Image (cartoon, rainbow, N blue to C red; front, side, top):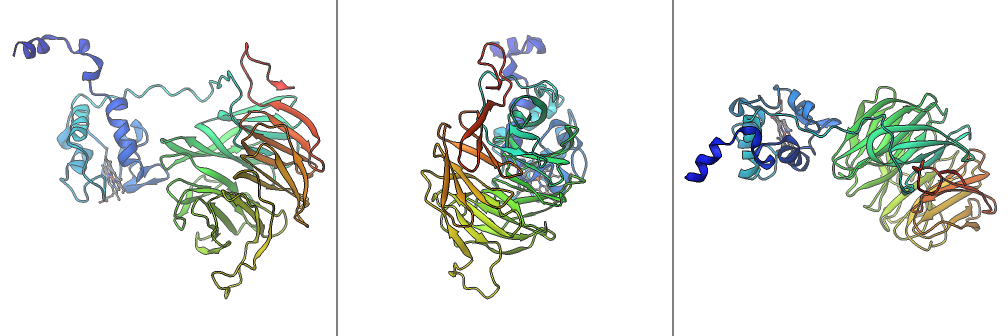
Length: 447
Ligand code: HEC
């Protein structure tokens, strides 16, 4: 009793922080865990997006998400307490009573936004050590190399002599980069783990972010752009592939034929179809216009992590956990039996570890295979014979890309260094750390 009285006399501002309802501490984690899956920008059920305070406040089709100081007039309270059907989270167990109380208390106290200030898009990341390289691409004119950094894409002159652009977005991690064939557009896919995925569409020449879409509640994988630049496909941890219109940034549709995370994708030569590969072991051919599933490209063997296409034909190379790169025709004749594997053109050597990156040289001559093993294997695409082994990296190579003329191969991974080899014999031409390391650490730039 005495204690309670004392409590009431304490001025509000002096209350221990934990006692004051907080959006950031109390509400956001619930939204992220139990609501965001259906209420995010790229797929907002009933137009409600709960991935930010502002969007949650704005609300959905029926009005604002909440009314400050009026829990009983707040849409969210009526939906989570079961006053309306369907109760939220839809199709799942009701929120724990403590969580419902958290919503009530926070709205009752004024529904204040105490989200931490997000590091502004133009405050550049600081690098104390080279971050793991997870994606890299050459610009189609061969002048530049775009590499994943922390919260940004780092664009270097292709000889590593200069960092020319820092393309900073929201996503903490960039896991895939692709250029349109004309070199005008660069797309980057990634996200902040366990929070959101992001697809960024950049004007590659101006270094200007044209659009960004956040989707799902985890990072996205294997973003690819159609050769004609019209569409972007991206794989997600909710087993879907989302397809966007590049010009407007609008999501056109998502496909749900996979049964596990979708990790990579590539469009066909005519931009009308794409293939996505997944941990569910399947490479699926999809009509890029309608999103209709056409057929499985492969016989299911093991989890797939990577895919690349022949530069002029609808032939793909896929690879993953079983360590073999498989070269397949994208098409299967309609009347083929399920177990028929005659569209498999070739199986390359077993690698020394799971495969994480594949590339087919633009002159069609070579296929590069990279992964957990510390060397990148280069194969003659016609004969399937190993032609060279590029060494020097520490184990864990997550990105490999041929230059547009096919003469060079750039690789990067765990050790944070880009290495550029002569693709014919794997002679090392140059290497550099793409992240601009801050003073006090070994110099960045060309080495
Ligand atoms: C499995 C998907 C799913 C999950 C998870 C989910 N919702 Fe919903 N939510 C929906 C759908 C679908 C609707 C539209 C229902 C309708 O129109 O009757 C909806 C509608 C709403 C609305 C009404 C929006 C409006 O203006 O029309 C609110 C508020 C809401 N949800 C809050 C939540 C909250 C809070 C959570 C988490 C505790 C949550 N939802 C979790 C699918 C979901």
